[in-house]
Length: 405
Image (cartoon, rainbow, N blue to C red):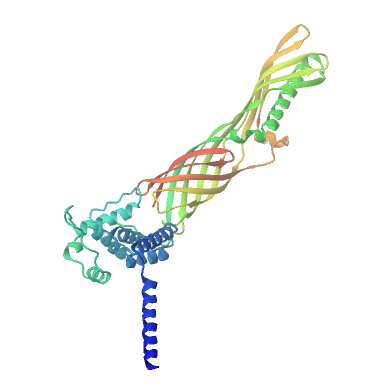
């Protein structure tokens, strides 16, 4: 009985040991796949700005693999996360780890902020690493040893030139911009073209009939025809200032701008008026409505990837200004009465105040609605070019320059 019990214990212990070994054992392929998955997850957290989770993921990768490529990527991700968390010293430590693995590594402002690139090359210069193609790179230094090295810097590193690196200001930062835009309502003119051309045609018919009645007495109008068409043209320019309450890496900003917008909607074509006595008048007509409001605008903008050198954005805004301008029409043509042919012409200009008195305009203020998608890119540190397309009481195509401080 004791012998059987002893054999049972031996088998039980062996089973436990075998199960534990199998539970932790992984093939190289499975382990590599797991590391790649962890790296992808950490990269995703980094792109979303969730730096604590990204750091946790990168540290797990470093603890699980000795593969140089994976470790280099993980240390690079750590350096970026710590940089954007304003943990500059630990960011430098992570950069050193990258350079210990890849001494010849280079980075560019095409993919990283200028200030991070400056920090990277400051660390690289301080390390003074020279590796020939035949000489393998030094193995990664354990974290505790590197930490001790950081606490007692060498004289060479203490004397290394300092490159200015911005610190993330908790109170946010400002941006000023100037811009110019082309404006049109052509894509949506069908929504109100018929009502506007009808209004112009009626004004021409009334004026034409009044002028003819002075010579031929009261004329009873019958049918009429019109081939008027509408067009649009305009421009906009402005100066604005924008505030990022969450700092340089914040995506949301509030802007205030002063805008001058020129809007002109011309109408042209023919109008034919027939009368009950068989006579008719056909005239070529030109008309326009023109306004140039000065508006104050409040806008809200969201940058999709604020840490990128080139980033798209979305903007929504409202504006208001005094509504003033004028409406004008003129015509010239021929009046046919039997065998008689007579040249006729006329026209009228009305201000928006005149139109308000007649009840054709009710608004005293010019409301403005702004909705657009755009993209901005850094030319040199602090100076950006931007372009956008969207709605500005019509279609707008805009380009401009902005400077942050």
